[in-house]
Amino acid sequence: MLTTIKGTYENGQITLAEKPISNQKVNVIVTFLEEETSTPPLNPRVPGSLKGKIHISDDFNEPLEDLEDYM
Image (cartoon, rainbow, N blue to C red; front, side, top):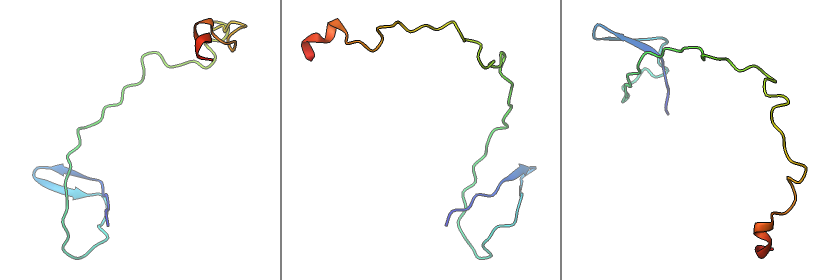
């Protein structure tokens, strides 16, 4: 069974955020994660900002002349 428990490492000690499920001896793997710094996007997206700027030609779904040999 695999279980993930979040914790912190400071001054040579690992402090778990919650109590492990198992009370018996088990193997563990410790992975050190870098501090995540989330920065907001420079220009947040505005819904609908491209409305009217993108056009699709009327013959968009018509067969291409270049591919007539393959039909």
